[in-house]
Image (cartoon, rainbow, N blue to C red):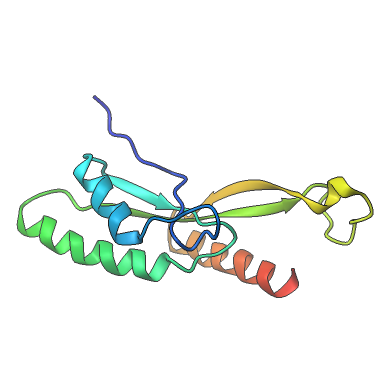
Length: 124
């Protein structure tokens, strides 16, 4: 049987959409035999430091038991303007955006994701 990894998971930092703590999500994923999990909160990356710190702590224990480390996947569920320009808000349809899941593949991807999310918060 192949392993399953959630690639779209919200924590308590996704207001009105998620309620699980980072610790509980990671513990449940490990209990269910998942090799990793992605945190993709709505429009923010507030949980990432807590996520990485907790997974680091968990992985020390797993290593001591001779088990494979748990893979933390950093991501974010971002919003994309329907017509690509935030200044186009003339119609009601323009006020809502599409959702897009972005996952960091490596350190460069993480840095790019930070830039995208930070720019959205400052330009939004």
